[in-house]
Every structure is written in C-alpha cells, then in structure tokens.
Image (tube, rainbow, N blue to C red; front, side, top):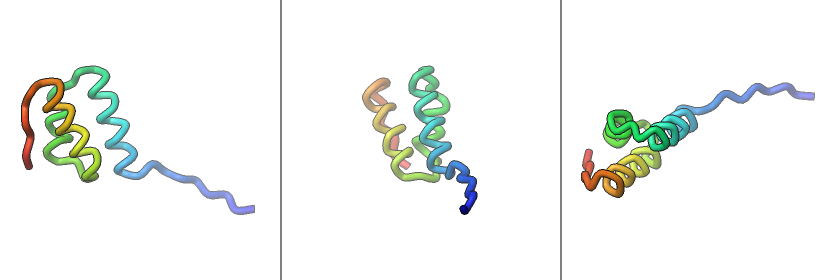
Length: 60
C-alpha cells in the first residue's frame, strides 16, 4: 500500500483564491490575479470577472 499525500498545486490555490475574491467582491485581489496569476486559466477568469462585473478590460 502506497501512502501518498497530495498537496494542492499553485493553480489550485490560485483558483480557490479567485473564487473567494469573486464571492467577497474583492476588486484588488481580482486585479492582482488578472495581471499576475501563474495559471493562465485563473488570469483569464479574473480578467473576465473584471470585465463582466466592473466593465474594466484587463490586458497584461
């Protein structure tokens, strides 16, 4: 039996961070994620949220 502990990846942590920020309407965090998240999917989701909610286009 192989016991393996899986730790969340950076992308998993960023994705959860983006979800919390969107739920809390945390504009500053969403802007940081849209501009500098390591995961491209998280950057795209944060940029889409900024565009849909605030009508602000983010391009990095």
